[in-house]
Amino acid sequence: DAGVTQSPTHLIKTRGQHVTLRCSPISGHKSVSWYQQVLGQGPQFIFQYYEKEERGRGNFPDRFSARQFPNYSSELNVNALLLGDSALYLCASSPTSGRYNTGELFFGEGSRLTVL
Amino acid sequence: GENVEQHPSTLSVQEGDSAVIKCTYSDSASNYFPWYKQELGKGPQLIIDIRSNVGEKKDQRIAVTLNKTAKHFSLHITETQPEDSAVYFCADPLTGTASKLTFGTGTRLQVTL
Image 1 (tube, each protein chain N blue to C red):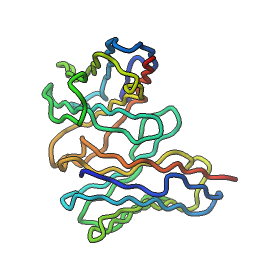
Image 2 (image 1 turned 60 degrees about the horizontal axis):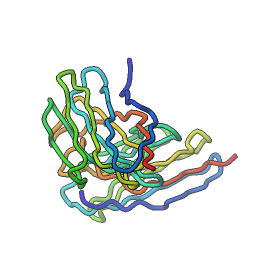
Image 3 (image 1 turned 90 degrees about the vertical axis):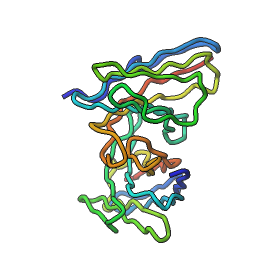
């Protein structure tokens, strides 16, 4: 079975540009979360979507947005890129959501974004 | 959980020795404590987790202990092997749901021959 797949794996952008990152969850998983991992640090929560609805948002500016499609895949969009947006963007899926979901997050290998 | 402190940041052990990584959390309501392993070029992978009603959990060479009074939980790896070399992260659920995690700063474990 395929795991969480993300695209593109690497990309380079310049300041002020826009980027779209894509994620396909494990088949049957309805929850998708996005994390930003700056080099040398732990992943930081950006968004969670479940059944196409936003279920949580981390402490990120409005330049960051996301959506989930009927097939549960997801996109993360970042506008007006800054140098500080350079990071590994990780997508994670899980079967369910909510307070009583204490299950595993399955991470993809990430999209490495470099902003010049 | 708002804040998770993780120590040490780097740890070097000889093959066969034990390794211990400790995390301290701040939210008394936290009830789920996972540990993730991240190998170079890959996403984090869950290796073990523990719920608040349990003090210790073991899975072969890996164990996690929880001290709710002191608000800390620890990862123990025994009989370390070179393939254990990776970065390890503890995590604490934001608002009580495991889909939104606050990760620690990570511990780079190096197992030398």
